[in-house]
Structure formats: structure tokens, C-alpha cells
Length: 111
Length: 115
Image (cartoon, rainbow over all chains, first blue to last red; front, side, top):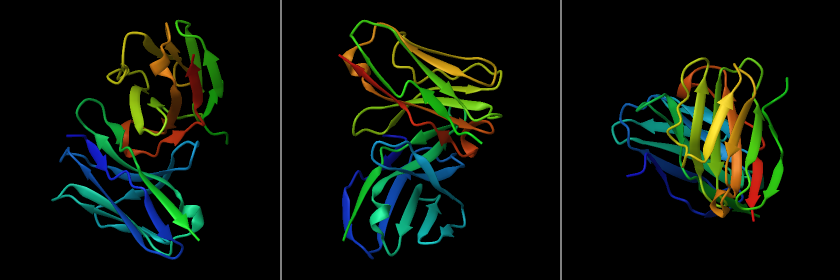
């Protein structure tokens, strides 16, 4: 089983739609969770951290479910500029405390 | 201040040649990471440096790959006897503190093409 798993997509949605991505992780001891965004041929950039209580940043909402070991990202009122790959990221405690990146979920927002 | 910088931005080499990739982290960042991203694939962890601790080399795919870091500054990733499957974007990232609890800031990457 992969340490971090995501549906690769693509998710094709119209402008204004609400879209949700899920991600599962294998290490129940993981403590830190993030969503990164990667535009085509660009480097990844932090979108938001994911807190136990859930958190919201404008149109973006992140949730953590420790019991089921998954995190989610909800995007409301999608914009064309949201088109990107969204990377689920979890810290790995096996050896050193490093981040493990999922392979990403591709989102394409169309007019 | 300046972000993470990497050089060269693009590198084309012939199979069997050695290449050296450079990363300049954000000043003051103690943690530095190297990743590889093949076309259409996710990020593959290669190596992690944290201060004066021994680096975590668990992601290096073979002994042709090595990396060094000078103190808490520049890092170089060396690939010896390059193979076509080494073609990828090599990304460097740094963070202000140890491990996986701090935001990682990525450089623009070095696109390596092995002919």
C-alpha cells in the first residue's frame, strides 16, 4: 500500500462548481498534513495546512479524519485559475520526519 | 528575500556523463530536500539534510546518486554515469525547521534530459 494515495483524476468541472478531493494515508502516527498545489511545469507551492479541527481559507476547506486516515480538500465556486494538480502531503515518522507527497489529483476548470 | 534557487535550469547530457545540480536554499533554512519528478508523475523523495545531522539518503535510487551540503547553505546533487531513465525534473526544497512540520519552499527545478 502506498503511504499516500490520491485519485489522479482528472476532475473536469465548470466554473462555479464545487469539487472535493480525498487522500488516504497509511501511517496512523502521522501528525502533519498539507495540501500543495502544482501548476503545469512549475514547482509545488503550499496551498494550506490541514488541522485536526478542519480549516478554511476563502473558497478552500480542508478536513482531517484520523479514524479513517484520510484528508480532504473542498473547493467552492471554482475559478479557471484553480486548474492545477493538488498534492496531498503527509509527514513520515518511520525514519526521519520528512514529508511524503501523493502523486496528485489533476483539476481542470472549464468556462 | 530570495527564494530557493537552482542551477542550471535545464541540462542536456549524453548517457554515461556525470552531472552536478546545485541548490541554494532560503537563507537560514536548516532543512534541505531533493526530489525527483518524472514527466506526469509525483514527487519522489531522494535525500534530506537537517543541520549537522547525518542526511537521510533512503530515497537515493542507486549508488550513482550522491549529494552534499556545505553547512546550512548550498547543496549539490551529483549523478554519475547518467542513464536515460534519470531524465526528470530535480526539485530542491528548504524549510526553516526540522522535518515534516514546516512548510517546504521549492526551487524552480532543474530539467535534466539524458540522451
